[in-house]
Image (cartoon, rainbow, N blue to C red; front, side, top):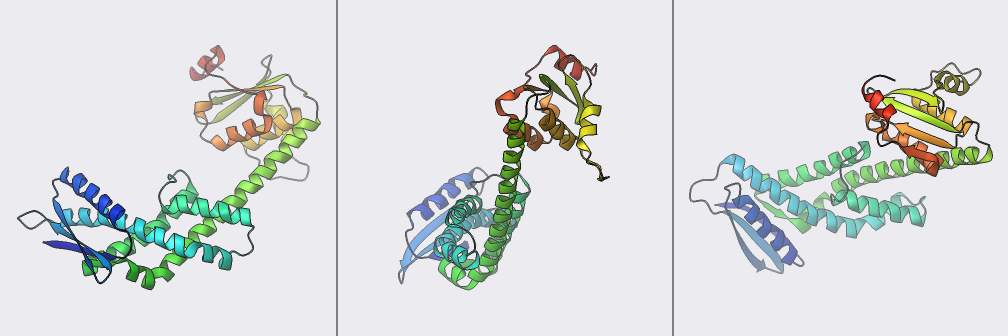
Length: 299
């Protein structure tokens, strides 16, 4: 039973290798496929057959199609990347500098080829746009039992471009946020460096539920002092506890900051900000008596 015909130009070794790897992988799922390759009018033609004597169930066909789609997507997206991305960036994003464009190209390549994991909101957004491209490829495969990669790129390039531009926009947005964050860190480091330390050591205890207790080196609770210093005259908007802590640390510029119970902190950016601003002044406690008391709810 013929499942799919794939037509493409260019080198076929890697493509055939990936399909052969898929053939071996599918055997572990009790799915047997056969591969026939020929050259017709300068095009590589690969035909995927079911090797099973009986009709292959629909759910198994779907598994074959999905896995083949992933291989075909990689070919299509790489061809699009190398043919179109430079032109897109130069025409649509001409306001960007050379270094910014290079950074975007690297990030875009890593996203499109799944080299970048899904670990934040940007990655989820970009993955969704990629899945839209993949879904379209899969639909073409199922509708025709045939896909011509060059033909697909010719007639669907505009749709791919729209998705890729959305990903580029998200990358640029992320780069701008990172740049603003870096400037923010530089400013805080400048303030810290310009003033003398008012406190020798500050202990930050992070309880379960991200509750914070701030103490100095002799056990005095510094939370009220930090909160008092964080409110600006004429501003009534409530400030988050993490912003209050960072503000208090910058104002008091302690010689050392000891963070206890870091595993209880869900906001890793909060810890990263403290480490970026205060650098070698920061000590991450790996387990002292106070930490054990913290875990026992005795602080």
